[in-house]
Image (cartoon, rainbow, N blue to C red):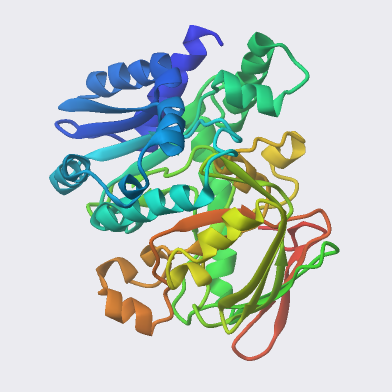
Length: 411
């Protein structure tokens, strides 16, 4: 990938993604394979006036060695120094960039119980950190760049170097850095998503009914004061940022106890280095009462059993089948991209900002409003070319929202 494109991408992440402010600290979580791009982000952040750039390097190969060989009791522990690292920076008001790039099948030989225990210990220790980001009190952005193992999974028929270059090209197009002015391209994209948000927020649907030929037949009740969001968001001090690059979705939250029926996945889910594929969830009064998968069923069940909140859904997201990522016909095996090619839901925690003044409400108040809470938030894809979604108003009026996999309204 040309250096000029990489610099444009890094500048976009810093200026439009987290929108770093002068004197602010930026914390970057990065796989070690992504070091060249991470260093470009650091350069761009300092040029934009960042006080400091702190890099938290990740090594998934070392993580696998630990999973396979460490003593059993270690997987329920989370080091205090790591907890203090995150909490000190999040309380300071730092911005956070996370680079999502992993081998989709790296941990397929690891005991899924160990993976889930690590996840639970981490999410419990970092609850305040996660809460602040999901309430937008700290600006954050998730992006991605290729690694060889990931690229070889996506483009299995190509030699490694060609696979990496092909994945770079696909990512550059998805995040619009292949354009002359990526910032301007994103401004136009945000305006396009805003039109959809206006329609959905004006409609104030009481529920959504999903159907497709895979077997999805689901009714999703929405809280009375729910809000649809998408494109960009704002921190409490009014600074705009983009949490995911790419993003093609508009999203809200379901009423915790108001989801009934069956959901069938349409794409594989890469969860902590394991693939879960061809799976279904059955829900009654919001709770997942049954889950099945042809691939990764044990992982899926462990995920659902993380805590009480992981038995419920926390996000409802709409993405047209005609979105650019979907039309590329590339299966990325990376949720950041695959969720932006398909309508999706999330198991677990809901975003408090998806309900009116939710970021200012206590956990108890949010619970009373039907907002789910959990240690996890895991998106999974359900959109298809024949997906139909009917919106139902409080008065019982039915309004088509999706027809043949795409939005049924013209805004």
